[in-house]
Length: 255
Image 1 (cartoon, one colour):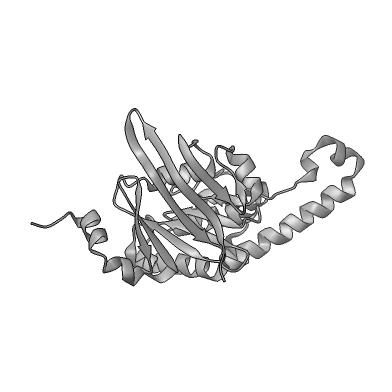
Image 2 (cartoon, helix red, strand yellow):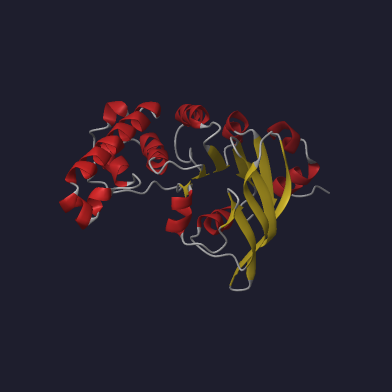
């Protein structure tokens, strides 16, 4: 029986009097790939920002892995095991793929002066562990053949995969994916979805915002629909596509 890894309850957030989130809530089950969809202005990005700590909710509760993380800072949430990617891949263009992955590895004792000076062996051991993990992640994402290339020289799709790899270096339990195939050709988008599907398992879940319905259908076990800052409905992809309220939210009510 799957348990809820993420619980969002009655979250509200407004900007200059406009309600981006108006009592929204949903659950994400452990071991799942859950889609979060809705028309433009539904509040999806604001929800991601509240969950990941980029902005605090004005009210409501966000619980992750049994802990109330409402209002926590992004770094504290990330250390807890919840990380996010961004629609536009972020990084340092003059770093290689390997260096980019290593930069986001967790628990780097070599960054602390005392350990670097007094326990250099431990620092070198940890660096090797992170290097091995980076190579493994690159292989799983099919980036191993470009691991020595500069990040700036990657294709758009490869940058999307590197953004996912960056998130995986912290050993997360839940990754929030913000439009992981936006801007790439359909064939590569399907390949990216395949990589995400291969990565998901009992110890790694995904919550995905995506506008490409073909990818949502291919990728997601369950789909949550938002509209006007609220939870509208949820179910399998086929169920929500047959739902009249979803059709109205996307297309408008016909006469």
